[in-house]
Length: 241
Ligand code: ZN
Image (cartoon, rainbow, N blue to C red; front, side, top):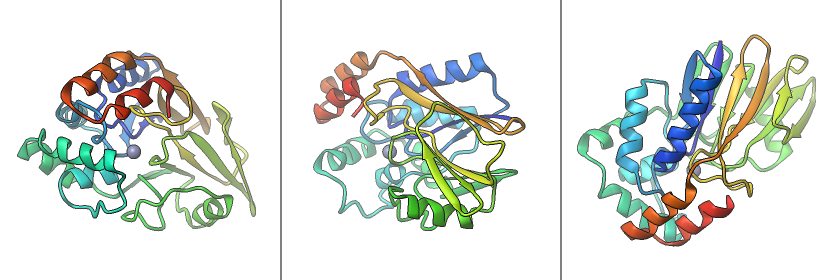
């Protein structure tokens, strides 16, 4: 089975279309979406409809729950809060219901998925230390764990008691015990690469490949400026921050 896994679309429809086209070109058996369909970007309704129509497994991110009033947003920054209110005003009741039905975790075969971390799926923690990665990997019930939330692609791997991390674009996992992969962000990358990110996991070969796809971020930035979202949300797309 070849998986096309992506996360943090953030209402950026052109980035999502570029990723789906790249996935189709490379060929996968299944798609998997790790949440934050909406928030920040100017196309929340289009992105929700596109993911619903894909019919793939998808899980909820913090921005999805925030947009439908199901998350305490007191720790959101002012730009994110403004985007939450704007997003909420653009969603139909059907689109809200779709987001509300997304589970917090998902699992099938050798893959388990969460937006933040499996030890607290509803708290949307940022995985930032090797110690935390090691605890998660030791408790992980599948060979591969995939997540998003930080918008920075990275692979953690466990061999025996040893945990390591790499930012390599292609990682051979055939000799490790378990791995935990952040698939980066489709619609708002934060690793100083403006291109959209997604991950191809080959379940038989046990490899992960982080792919980057160019799209017209300037057009999305201009739409953000035009619809009245905070301009910083458009400017950051140019730099991938
Ligand atoms: Zn996000």
